[in-house]
Length: 122
Length: 276
Ligand code: SF4
Ligand code: SF4
Image 1 (cartoon, each protein chain N blue to C red):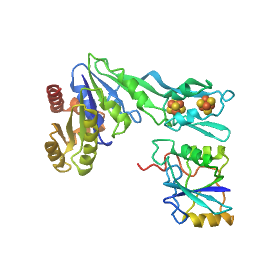
Image 2 (image 1 turned 30 degrees about the vertical axis):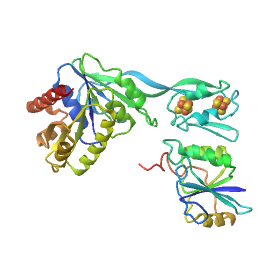
Image 3 (image 1 turned 135 degrees about the vertical axis):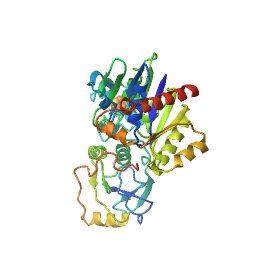
Image 4 (image 1 turned 120 degrees about the horizontal axis):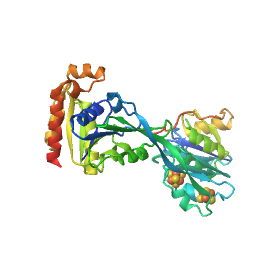
C-alpha cells in the first residue's frame, strides 16, 4: 500500500512539513517494499485552493494514507471523498513516522485541524 | 475627476483623509471601497440604505449528466473544483465566478446560478452622496463589489474613493482607472515601509500619485527624505493635532470643526488639479 508523507525535503530522512496543501514535497512510500519516491508539491504556490489540489494529486498517485501536520477543511473534505486516511499531528522525520505507522501507533483524524488558509505565508 | 485615497496599511487615517477631502470640495461624492470594513459613513448622520445585492455567477453541477471527466477541475485556476474517486466537490468560497468551467464542460453538466457575495448601500447627503459595499462574511473576494461600486462614480462630480488598505487585488482595483491617487502614510519607519510597497504597486499601475503625511510630528523625517529622493510630490502634512482627535471622538470631521483644515484640503485639491 502507498502512503504519502508531507516533507520539507526529499528522501526518508527529511523532516516532516506540518503543512499539507503548501508542503514542499510529498514522500510516497510503498509499505510492502519500503521503496520511496519524493515528488515536489506543485500546489505549494497556488494562489488559492492548494489543499484540494494537493489532495487530488496524491489521490491520483494512489496513496491510501496521508501523514502530515495539519489539514484544513477543504483539503480534509477532498481527502475524505478520495477515501484517503488522514493522520495529523506528525513530527520528526519521514522514516520515523513510517515506522510508527507500521507499528500501528498513529490514529486517523476525522476533522480538519486548522482553519482555511492556515498554511499560507502572509 | 476621480481621486483614490489609499494606504499601505490600515490605521493611517486614510478614511479620515478621504472623508475630509470629499467634504472640502464642491460637488463631490464619496465611494468607500473598503468592503471588508467600510467606515466612512460614521462621519455622516444619515443612515446607509441598501441599493442592491452584488452577485457573481457560480456553477451548479448536474451530477446525473456529469461524467467526472475532470476537465472543469483541471481548468479552474482557483482550484474550486476537485474530482476524487467517484465524486465531484465544489468549494464555493474558492470560486471567482469566471464562468470558464461551464464553457469547458463537454456534456453541458454545468449551469450558472447567481451567488450573492455582498450588498451596496447608499447614504450621505444630496450634496455629498456616500456609497459603500459590504462583503458577506465568509466571502473572500471583494473585487466584484468594488467593480460595481466604481460604476456609481458620477462623471459630473469629483469622486473620492476610499481604498481598502494594503496592496492586494482589491486595493489595486481602486487605484486604477482613476485620475490621481493620494497615498496616506505616517512619518514612522513602519509608515515608510508600507509607503514604499504601495509606491511600487502604483508605479506599476501608472496612476499619478502624491503623498499626504498624517499625524506629522509623531516620528521622523524619513518619509520626507524618501519622497524627495524619489521625486514624489508631498501634498500635505497633517499635524498630530489633539484638536482633531477631540473632534473625531465626537464624530466631527476636522474640516467641520477647524476651518484651517478645509483650506488645507482645498490646497491639496488645487495641487492635484495642476498635476493631472
Ligand atoms: S466559475 Fe471559474 S472560478 Fe468558479 S469554479 Fe468555474 S472555473 Fe472555477
Ligand atoms: S467538465 Fe463537466 S462532465 Fe467533466 S467533470 Fe466537470 S462537470 Fe463533470
